[in-house]
Length: 350
Image (cartoon, rainbow, N blue to C red):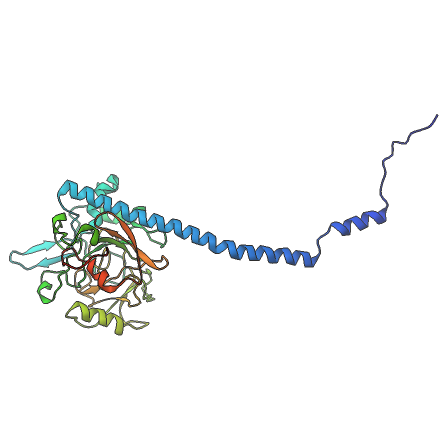
């Protein structure tokens, strides 16, 4: 009888060694793989970043659209767009005291009822031309200052709690206080006006031709460093008019100004140039830095605040008819001035 073996075949030791070396990865092959992966990452990385920034820009645009919708709900309810003012005293007669109020406060009733109910109507906080965050008097206001409100923050920027990326258009002049309005023309006459509500009938240039809100990067929140694109520097002189202010912002700017303010956009609760207003004196993303007349005049004195964004090539602007446009940095200055006022009889953008 023939006996069958149950033993399996085992390759010779020499053949196992040859197979081992045949399946191993050589150093040159590994370097090639690393090189290919590096190239792919260099191509994919920027594309991913661009995709993320496009998403952030869309969110920023939607926020502005929601603000205009809330403004229209306010107009439908109260017969005018939201009130805004800085904190100042009009000697009169009659004498009138104004509290600092951003349009954002009145819009909150149509954006977030829970936050709106916490707003203190008697808050007497002063925006203050000071190198520090806003010092809010009311305990309720301080509590709200600790809350991040997404609709007030453009996700392309790093916006702290209580701060805002979005500003109200006060016109094409640095003059907004009644005591200054006789000193030059044109008058401010943006979509908003200091100390009063503006109705739709006052937009004689057309709602679609008048800017309402725009975006501005917040300050760098570092009082020991001056960042021209974000911060505001203070001039050490009085300035008579808008054109002279724009010239000085351009010609007097220095890398390390003696006095600068890093908390621009620091709160959405207060009116004034430092926090929630902007003007059409400079075009968007201007290379000319923002500047103000001095330490006593941030609230409603002569200050230039331009729209500035981190988006490539321009910034978003919400028009008074509810549309949101991306305005290029290269926009013609005449057109930019025209859409900054509601009733100057200038040509619009269309």
